[in-house]
Length: 297
Image (cartoon, rainbow, N blue to C red):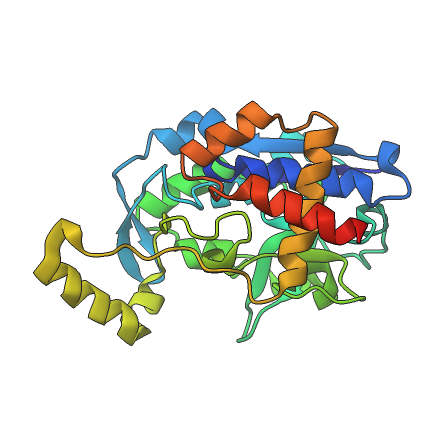
């Protein structure tokens, strides 16, 4: 084996994770040369044990909720330990879908880096949502211990998740196409539907994630909605997920989902259950049928 791909998720994003795992194998020329593993937040007792506790995020105090849409994010730091700090791993969020060949990423020259990922705007800012890891050089990654430090106010979540706790000299940069933010082009290697509000399998559902503190502070619309809710109470309208601005992204996802249904990776009963839980849009079967008609035309 040339490495392991880890997709970390929770139950709210399990359909995305299954589709992501399928895309990794489907679009590789050597699908038998690596393993794909899904890590579920619900199977990690150390996450559940912190429900309702205050932690440090972006310099402010927040409350940990295991039912948040992104409660899986600390698990980005678990794969090196799962592999016994040996070999290579690619770690991705459950909303990252391979367009290119992940085997090419697993086997690329890391030029001595312990981590390779995409840069974000700003000094020492990295996107840890897609990472190539040399696990032997990451023995200091102790996910459970470092997660506990958030609640002891000794580690900031944003510093951790943005890799600001790492030595920059150990981080190499991936081309943006390996973590293409909501953009599908001929150069895209991994499509990341990173804007949660427009994830294509959730269109029309009520929003179920906690906005960042900065987003809340800066969003005039958010402040106005808060005022309206103050007047209307529980009868105020809830924000909903919106259609993805690039129709090709929606079509790409539903093409993959249709293949998962055909292969039994996702069953109709499973998909209907996820729809009933408001984890998948309620018109998913209609969208699947439309995408298939368009592909056949």
